[in-house]
Every structure is written in C-alpha cells, then in structure tokens.
Image 1 (tube, chains in turn red, cyan, brown, orange):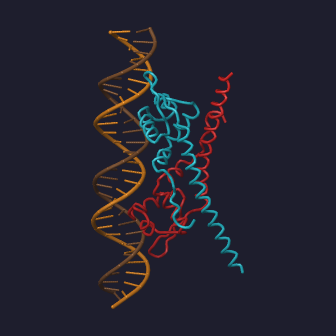
Image 2 (tube, each protein chain N blue to C red):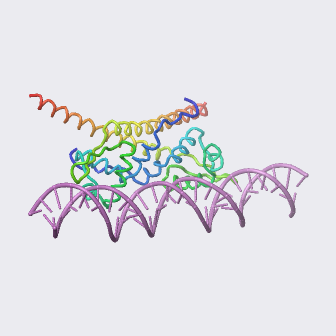
Length: 116
Length: 116
DNA sequence: ATCCTCCTGCAACGTTTGGTTGCACATGAC
DNA sequence: GTCATGTGCAACCAAACGTTGCAGGAGGAT
C-alpha cells in the first residue's frame, strides 16, 4: 500500500452526504420511515423550499426515492445506497487511521534508532 | 435509543473534511510527511492560491499546523485532530448501519407476522 | 359545482464558498 | 546589487445553500 491508494470514493455520493442539512434529513427519514418536504421542514430550521431542493439532490444520487400519493409526495431512504455511503465513510476513516498508525510506527522506530 | 440521538458531530470539522480537494491534500500530506502550498498544488489540478485557501481552512480547524522555514511555509497534519475526524466519519457510518439493520429486523418481523 | 385549504413547483434574489487571475512583497542564490 | 522562487492580498467568476413570493393542483366542506 505504497503511494497512491486511489481513494475509491464516489464524489457525487460523498458531496450529497457532505451537507449537514441533508445528513439531518436522512436521519429523520430513517427514524420516521418516510416524510414529505413539508413534514421534514417542520422538524428542521430551514424552509420547505430548501428541503425540497435537498430532496432533489438526494434523489438524483439515489439516496432517497419518491412516491406520489395524492397531492403529496412521500420520500423514503434507499437502504442499499445509504449502506454504500456509510461504507465509504468508514472506509475513509479507516484509511486515515491506517496511515496515522503507520506514521506512529515509523516515529517509534526512529526513536529506537536514536537511542542506540 | 429512540428519537433524537444528537448526532455529536463537530460541524466545522466535518465541513473541513467534506471538500474533496481538502481530503486529497490531507492524503498527500500524510503520504509525503509535509508540504507547502506550492508543492501540493503541483500534484493537484488546482492553483497554488486555491491550495493556500484550503490550507487556511484546515489550519483554522486544527487539522494541519504550519511552521515557517525560511521563505517557505511547511504544513503537516495534526495527527490527533485527524484521528478525531476519522472517528467521526466512522461514527456516522456506524449509526446509519445500525439504523438500517434495525429497520431490516422490523421488516422481517412484520413478514413473519403476516405469514401466520 | 364552488370555496377553502394544504401541498407542491417555479422563479428571482442574496450570501457563502471554491476557483481563478494579477500583482506586490519577502527571502535565498548568484 | 540582480534574479529567481515562494508567499500573501485583492478582485472577480461560478456554483451551491438559503430565502421570499407567487402560481398551480388535489381534497374536503358547504
């Protein structure tokens, strides 16, 4: 695992979950099962229109899916896609942890050498 | 763990690592040990000034630290802070995984009930 | 059917952020 | 000293997040 590890991260997916408002929305949808732009906005400090735009973003990357029910449009989380996103998060975190530990080992080795 | 789980995420730290260019910079700094705005920009598809701004952001949240060496300014990652960031990533990923598995269990339980 | 309500969708606007170019300043090499 | 290299600052552009305002569509009550 020498130099470039190619960081296999879907950038559109990452930027979708990068926004704190969208993370909050995903959280609400997970807890409540589903929701509309209106119901979500009532539980968050932003307007319905802002929520609607975010739902559009999440829908474009496949993290949520919409079903038209009469005059309202219910969204729910696409579980497979969210699982992929979660895996990416853990993956980047693990990569950094691995690099940090490698650095730590090298530093310790140098210290040992200098103590001779 | 019913409704609100407070999502204990440092928002400034998250938004700092949310940008793909900044993640790339952190990666380069980890691999090469340290770097300046100029050397980093040579390995990336953006200008030196853009890199300098990102280094400013990373420095403000404590992810990198600068040491003035002559006419150049070398940056290196703050390992403790990056470890905290990595932990946050894994934490959010794990939270989502837990919610998804909980939903999966509920769905299975409902299916069993309906099969009776 | 008509009126009223609720939810959605579109357009315009302001602010922040990532990126650029251009130029001025400081430091090291000659 | 001159010249080259690295940094820093300011102006500018484009995209994204958020707002307000208004038009339109679907249900329920009279």
